[in-house]
Image (cartoon, rainbow, N blue to C red):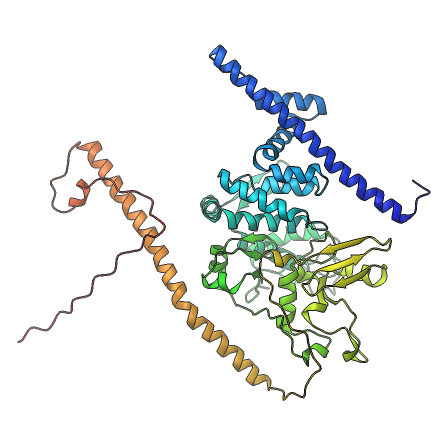
Length: 528
């Protein structure tokens, strides 16, 4: 291929990539058919012989491992994937066989939907994902994961909630010593806590000077001890003038007042309890509505507003609300396949801002702004890549060889995007003072809190009452079991007659509500 032009070489890469998807689909389809044969044969043998035989899945795994020179574990995964496409996701499998999607995307769909057990729900997911999967070109891995997780939570919210509750009950932190003087730290914690912990370690690792000889990963590992002792990370540069050397930064250099900020993106309806649409936790991914509301109760809420006044559109720096709206809309860098978080990206003008004559073009509006990480920002500026942004936020990229790639904003998959009006020529406006603007924002925030506080309190009261009712029922059932175990007959005690009642169900219906409290009777003073 040395004589081919770059355009032809890129075309060869794309065609071979599609052919690879077709071949993977063909192989998985063959494995699935082999599995059907082996399962049917194993069932027939078990009926005829009357005792346990090697099941069809194990036989298929052994044959595939031998044919492809795979380990038993790798072959079992391959057979499981083939079975999932054959039985659970046939429409997604059809797209793979046509080369309209790739194996990376399909494998993510299989792994993120494997806990959906209801046949009707998995069929709906298969149909919904198949209609959208063809549009997922140029998507990063994290964005595909977010889209699938959001679809699963919307299709099966009860199962997602149950899995999260079960996982929350199993949270733990463990430490295992190694024979080389080190130890392994592992565990499972809440998503928000893990994100904050990860962010804090990175903050501490960046507080040393540039002459520190350790790698970033080594500094993050050392920051764990500093975090535990409540101090900053000491620099290891050895320079006497370094302000972060170990004899200065000790346990007294505490971390009081230091905050770790994590960002959660969600719609107002989800936060207020009017919707169960999922949210997005930066650095983690999709979280369900209950997690969003739990985090929002102790968080500072910030408005992401894409609306821009005509006057502000002629300023180079976007307003804080507009910048938040762009980052919430994009969630990641907008270059094809890039998954760097939007919070670590530059806000780029697609049509460059004209500093000499702002009215000539390149306005600071949502339709002309997008998130680009520094690497791809430089690639756009100096690497001959061309970009065009559409009104809905879609960016059409043109490579130096003329290939085009489309990237849609990742936030559009999770949150509805409001339409923004085009900006006209700026009229003469009377500026409001900063004091009035701040007072207005504070009044709006307080009004919002007053409106939603009763709703959140009512929801918390019902949830607390449900937990208490289940706990009380379990206690009463336990006492009834003990009575039957030790006495074998009913109790004659007048102090707890309920112990003779039948056992109560320990699960409450979804519409259960606590009984209304009895009115308090006021005791009047005696007439003497």
